[in-house]
Length: 298
Image (tube, rainbow, N blue to C red; front, side, top):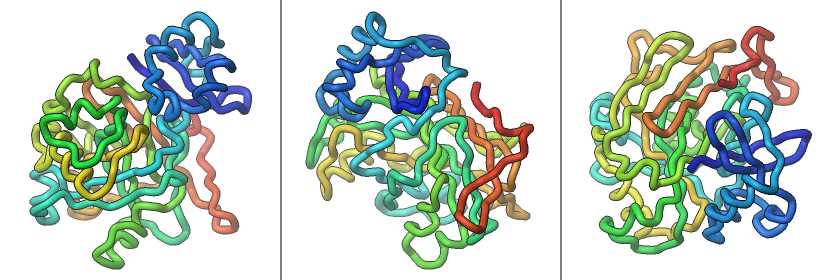
């Protein structure tokens, strides 16, 4: 099954996706589960799927405004340097290299990635996102995938100069409007063991990243087990599992994103996430985009 969080007519909604059709959870269901995260916490996705088909409003995917799949995660934990070739670009860690991203930096499919007047070194990072479905602490590697609700695409867009101000990645990873997440949550049963999924990134028409999750230094089950050793994982938490080689900062010469670029992240059996890059308004940190690039949904 596939689920989506979105806005329609100014209202935050979520629902089941079937092809290009969204069956939105009705008000009675949303009174019980106000968000997709709340439905996951209550182990209610099957109920959402059934009730949405019969009781909710129906939308077409090209008529909704996508929100981040989980707009309100309790935690977003990201893994750096987790693909062999990318580790060779920057140095392989002995343990998962972890950092955090804040929930209010996220955007949905089709929304604009924000440039900032603070930096002209905005970089792309195509990644597989893992959405936790069952809470746990000190989860064994053997049991870890049973705690996964589903998967999605992520673009962990990064201000590289701010990332390198210190050994801590936090500043460069948390500019507003840089964490693209979506378009859908694809349930774990649709994917199985996520150990051989092709991850591809295009900037405009150029392929800039391509690898398989088989190339991860620390696969999903090991990441979950490791993270849960120091912090309890809760339903709706998000783990962003790292990016392959080919990021702009490692190219010669470097290739950073500019206004009007369109970044597309595609992961086999998970989906395609597409976002254009907009200019920053220095006065208030907002964005604008050339008219020809405003429509990025598909």
